[in-house]
Length: 408
Ligand code: HSE
Image (cartoon, rainbow, N blue to C red; front, side, top):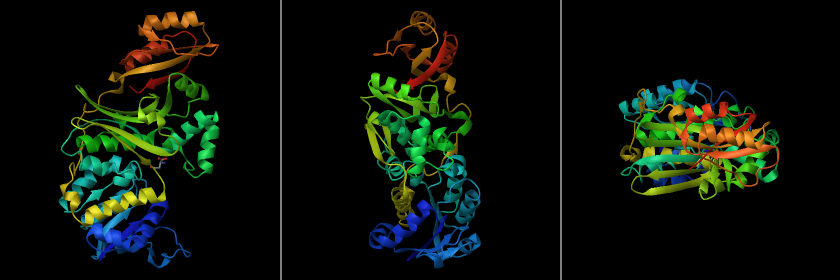
């Protein structure tokens, strides 16, 4: 019997405790031993929970108990999750986490500490919820080379974008709906401003390369300024707007960034709706691999945690690739200004003639957009650097209503 502790008895932590209870036989088969939750650490008491007698408030009870082989950290945030994870690893306990902020910011040091202490620090649940994505890259694609990843990595914003397109409702209305349905956090800023997806694409890029980027080097753009006119433009271009986290190996470094993009209809990511997540992984030998599933929620995320619990306890994590990360050296992540993109642009407050003349002058060849509504001008640029794009946008006449990158 392996005794474990769960730190943080919220949606995911609660899911882990009940899944361990309900799936004992299957977990024992995979983990190589029966698993039992001995302690649940939380600030709160849960008198009505069937697990009330396991709830404790002093983390040292866990750290000082030699019976505890593994700690599940589902509390979120950096502090005190970092201190608790550090203490557990130093005490020779495996740590399994769903905490993407902690993994993105301190994953490299925690993985190193785990290695030094002969235990695992695993984080499958930190990206894509229930999608078996990270382990797949670290095992099935380990002998290949992941060259690019484009992902819809945030369920809340994907729900908002789906509702804006299908329901013709504004960003604020769609966000309120998402909050009512319990998808969005009370404070949804990390979701809508792209920080949640930023952390997740940083983690995926690190799984692919072994280097974790500094978040200051990873451009993240809010999706809160999108309008129904953008959804309509994307539809006329044969695609859909999605918040995309991108990683790509290029000759002069890797590019890693997050922004809303028009995804052409031929790309499966354009058809990922509601709270679903997906990631398209381009591997050198295998080619494109598509992952799709529930990116959030109690049981999908708890299921991913439990798969890590099993991998830690049965020791199979030792044969997975990229067990530790290095902090990325300066210049490893290309400057966003040097990234090349095509851009859809919509301008108001100047005549179509004036806008298109200026567009040709500053962007060279531009493509027309079918069905442009009266009162605005629209065009799509060719591929050029972000530096050229932003200089071009600032010299257009009228008001730039929208400038959205296209996922090629
Ligand atoms: N807020 C996140 C999302 C939760 O909406 O995707 C899962 O990480």
